[in-house]
Image (cartoon, rainbow, N blue to C red; front, top):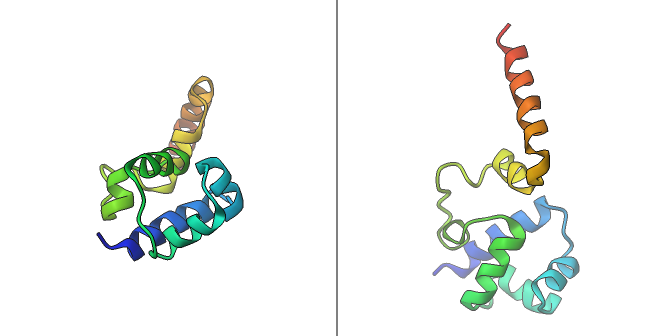
Length: 105
C-alpha cells in the first residue's frame, strides 16, 4: 500500500467537494488530526474507515486504494451525478440532452 498516494487521493477529493478537514473529520467520526495523518500518509485506516471515506467522498474503494478509476467513475461529472438526488435526475438528464443537442447543430 502506498499510503502517501492514498492520502493524496483522499485530500484531493475532500478539497474538490469543499470539505474542510474539520467537517470531513466530523462526518467520518474521527479527529481532524487523524484525517491529517491519513492524508499525509502517516497512518493507515481500518476497512470500516475506508468504507466511510468512500461513501462520504463518493469514490470507490479501488480508486482510493489503487488510483484506478473503474469505468470513468472518478471523473467529476460522474461524481456530480452520484450526488444528485434521485428525484432530480430526470431534470439533470434533460439538461444534458439539451446541451448535447445544442452542440451538434
